[in-house]
Image (cartoon, rainbow, N blue to C red; front, top):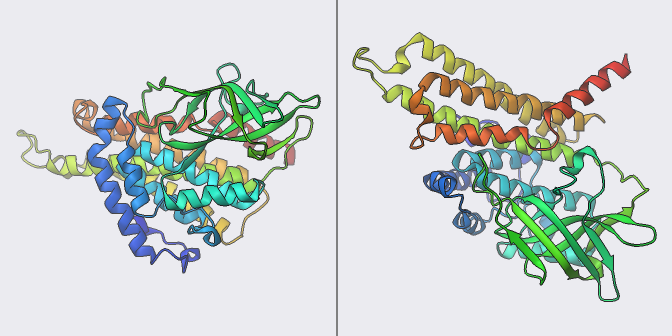
Length: 399
């Protein structure tokens, strides 16, 4: 079975985490512990608070915070490996952690937030469990990735900004200390952008609406804001509606590759369970484990090929980015990797279900949970149709 440090990018040397091996061992041990509770959280739809307490104790909530602000400032390839390993234990925990990592990675690179606010958020995340995530999707608009403006409004007053709106699918909402809320202002010349909203303010409410097929323990509930007052400096990054924001190609790249690594971890966990099952399952009419049959060996070989290709795609591009060796089209390249690797992950788990039949769909076995979780890879922005449309346009317009 593959190990976390199977692909160790050269850019990970001397990053300040004791040693890479110690980092990997800590994460592997945590992931094994998370796996013992993953099925229960999935069945109950409960949130794995204890997993994040363990991640904090292990010093793993600040890996994308700059070193000068108390974090580790690790590169993309390392973060992908961390996410992949955590996902092998519990995919829902890995998704919440991914979103937290991404927000801090983007903030560290762009440095558009108020400096004092940014330093405080970093300090809180180093010292305690202070997770952060964006709140963007709305009932009427859907995902903002397909265009449009938020219905959530920010009204500027003498006391600060007052936010009112309704957000959906706010991943990690039960544990988040801060929400980065996408809203537009009510000024004569409206602005649109992100506002920092602490979780404990009057007028903020979490409505427990999340009852999903997969990723059931992510607590991706609705966020309701009713005249929530925040300080003026909590407007993190707002611009006139008429002004197109500058595009940071690495922002989408980090999102695409970390999500790819997450679902690679889910598919790898499914593969690992399948190997154990096929070696242990010995039908009476066969007198030997199923693992000895050529049909099963061929199918598992197909799974291995899919996972091998995905690992090479993810970590090959991630290493290039960490070295600064990437093309202007790196964002589209990363989206292409997401499309290919998540398709591979779904197919790999499907192969396991085809091989096992009824046992693979039993709730007592993790394979059906891995399948439900891996299907969620299609939901994340950008969706497959958007990726393929962009790819097609890039080729056709270049000819």
